[in-house]
Amino acid sequence: MGTQVPPTAEEATPGELRRASLRLLLMLLVLGLLVVPLIHELPLGRSTRIGLLAWLLVALALYWLYKGMGYRPLLLVQLLLFSMAATLLSAKVLLVIVDVREVNILRAAARWFVLLGTAFAGANLGGMLVRLLQQQRRQ
Image 1 (cartoon, one colour):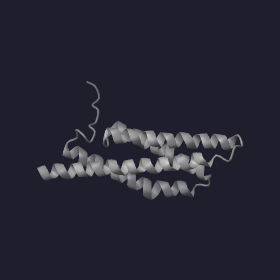
Image 2: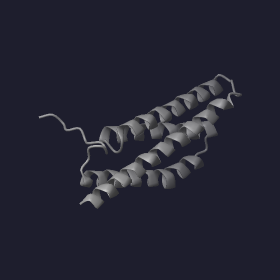
Image 3: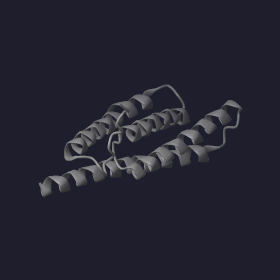
Image 4: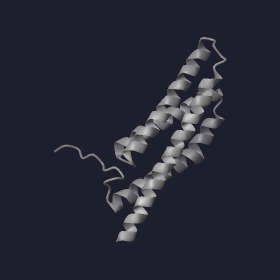
């Protein structure tokens, strides 16, 4: 008896889709309303704060992918974008440690990757909700 892989939004039943979209919505709300302001208040540099957020988003994207919370292609793009942002910011922090401070393009690019990945997370949730509404109309 193996473990069952949770269905993605493409093959989820209406109940599974409803639960997954609600969990995803709650996670995004907690992230936006509690975690981001908390990270913003930490006494760290801007790159480090954005880096913490990027690594948190990488972990969340992995969790969403593992739990099948959305459309696999969108989840993979999110994971790629958040990973790229985290990698760029980690490189920026390492460069600052070795006293190379004028590489602000890394932080700017990482910030855009985070914003783009967040847009894909919103599109993922929106797609799930649209599919749920379509399924409810058919019943």
